[in-house]
Structures are given as C-alpha cells and as structure tokens.
Image (cartoon, rainbow, N blue to C red; front, side, top):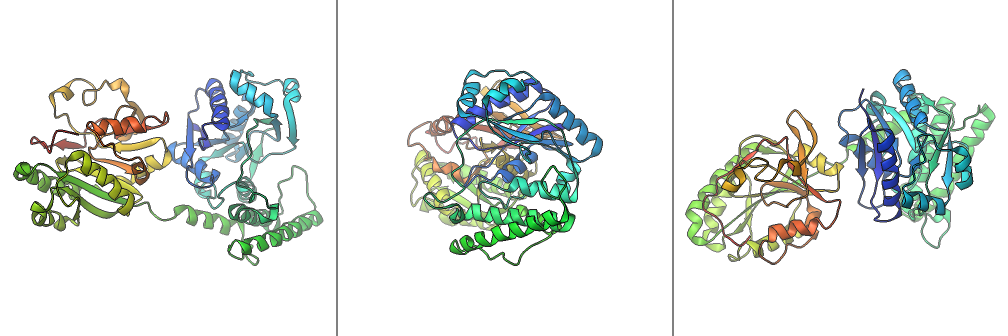
Length: 519
C-alpha cells in the first residue's frame, strides 16, 4: 500500500519557508518510508484546496494520502495510528483532536535551531510554549483513502483565499463517508497571519470578496451536514434543539454576509441551500474548469544563402511536427527571421499544416529575433502554455502535450520540459545525456517510459514546453543568450528544467547547415 504526504504550499522566502524547512526535515527523519509531495498554488490569493489537489496529482498512484500543513508537528505514534486506522476501516482519519498553537518566539527559535523534539514531543515542555488551545481541529493532518478521494474529487477549489475549506471537507466527509479520529494534539507553529481575510481598515463583515464567498460557501456545507445528516463538527453529542439553533445561526450569519456580497457584486445565494451531494458535484465541475491551452511556435531563420538547405529542413520538420505532436493546441505559428524575401514560400510551407507566418520585417539574426519572439509570446500568444520548437527537428515518436502540462502545473519550480534529442554532435556521444554526466539528472515519476529527468544545468531552445509567464524575463541581448537566459532563471534556487520521459530520445536533429553562429 503506497502512502504519501501531500503538502499545500506557497513560497514566501520568509518565515513560512523557514517553518516548512524545519517541519519537512522532521517528517523525513521520522517517516523515511513516506515520500513528500508539495502542491504549490502561486497565482492570486492562496488556494489551499488547489494546492492539496496539485500535490495529490503530483504523487501519482497512491493508496493513502496524508494531507499535512507545512507548519505542524505531531507525535509519530499518532500519525502511525491514523495510517493503521484508515487502512483498517477505509475511512478518512484525523491524526489528532486538539490544536495547540506555539507562541512566536519559540516557533522562530525552533526553526532557527532545527531542534529535534524527538518522535514523541514532551507535553510538559510544550505546555510552556503554547499560547492558545482549541479543543478540536478538523485540519492539519488527515489520512485519506484513495477510493474516498476519487469519489469526492479532492478538495473544493471554489475556496479562494483564507478559510472554510477545512470545514467544507469536514462536513462532506462526516456526512457522506464517515470518519475516524486518533486522540492527541497537533502542534501548530506561529507565522504571520494571512492578510486575505478582510479589507484593511474595514470591519469583518466588509471582508474581501474571496473571504465573503468562502464564508458563505462554507456555511452551505455546515448547514447541509446538520440539516440532512444530523451531524456537526463537535466532539460531543448534539440534540435536535441545538442542531436547529446551529442552522438558524449559520443562516443569520449568512444574511449578514449577503449584504457584503451585494456590495462586491457577488451572486445572491440567499435561496441556495444545496445538499452535500450537490456541493460535491459542483466542486467537481468547478475543478474540471477550462482546459489548459497551448500556443505552438515553430521558429525558423538563417542567412539568405542557407535558404535552400534550411527550407528543406523546415518542410520535413513541420510535417513531422503536425503528425506526431498533439494536445490542447489553440494557435500554430511559424515565427520567421528570414525577412520578406522568402515569405511567399514560407506561407506555402506553413498553411497546409494549419500554421500562419509572423516575424520581423527584416532578417535580424538569432539574438534579436529571439528577443522579438519573447515579446511576441508575451503580447500575442493565445495559449497559457507555449510549445516552442525549431525548424530542424524530426519527431520520432508521438508526443502528447497534456501530461507535460500536468507536470508543469504540479511543480511551479519546473520552468521547462524539453524533448530529449538523439546525440548529434561528437561531444554529445560520450556516456550520459548529451554529453552531460547522468548523475546531473534526477529521475522523477518514471513509470512505463513516462516521467522526466530534472536538472539545473541549462535552458534549451530545442523543442520544449513552458508556461507563457517565463517570457516575463526578457531574452538577453548578447551572445550565448541561451545559456545566459538559463542562468537568469536559475538565480531562483527552486527553478529547474527537465527532459521528458525516461532518457530515450524523442527527436532527431537534421540541421547540418546551421542557421547562424551567435546563439
């Protein structure tokens, strides 16, 4: 039975990263048999649900997923007991009951000193550091069997920004699937609070649009579990009268939030009180969302005297590309640095394969055309992702861009996934990968020929997929621009590149006559 840790994350280059470095080291020390997968949500207000779902996708095939926050510690015995309970019962199992918050000074000190509290932290010692205790927690460390995860569809990604996604998950699990709980504490380390809860300078009920939506959506889950299933989030029995008071209070709060919703131009949900099943299906439909899109750009160019040879490469390459590369492609562009002299012939080559030709009005050379290409992608690319290729490659196998997109979505540090080409130059024929030592590449998720080989060596203009946002970094105006651009991205210590697959080539290079020399 394959068990994995799933961690929702967003880098802050500050206290949250420091806490996670400390906590991760502890999880790796005491659970060396359980791999950790991080899901990063990077755009807009933090979406914890989306980050958890990304981590689950990145983990691949698993049987038990343990959702852990990046700022918590638990006794090893509690987590092991929760795993065993989930295996035995097939139910979602919380690995703790009480939530205990460590004060700021001790949280900072623990992370800075990397202090090992041992597998079973001393409760007497922790009592000296705790500044706040909640009698029950529905977040932090949850063991989820795969059948329930798949039926549920993961966490509800309609919760954007801080709050209430944990109570939604609690409500739907308790109401539709049943749950288990291991007694014990979860230790939460201090960090600065999220600023997404309210509009600065205004009161709670004039909260941000995201918080208002979260609060109202969360209340629909909380009402449904009480109204339809007679269950609550308490750890003590609740009689019918108290249940009715709960529902009345939740709806009263919702009416207050409705006034704020109207000020923000949000939908009026006053009469929308769905069942848990309806909420589950709505979350699945939202999660499916629009399909990611790809702009396919084939870059061509060279000195005029090379046109005869290189145009033949282009004819062969574009035909091979059209035959073998598939995915959610919404735009096919030939980006030409040939100037106007060969435009009619270029159109004749491109049009039969669904491409149209753009590019500089005159031949400008590799570096200048790459700079203009980058500006074109930023301003004119229709796809969220870009599959950029050159005009002298043949595609020896079918390439599906969809799983490559999923890999990029799951790991924001991954800036580019390239297709590995067969060795062409003499220096590349040595052992390793294109002349580089094999140990410079880290296999990731390699199964049945899929997966990738990650590295921090170079950016390549060989056929590759990347997110359009990569072009927010300007292309360097100098020779060796490919290498310089890669070095620029690698200033971020989390940045990395990859070759798609298990190390077998996808493409072959046919460009014996070079397009130029100043790359």
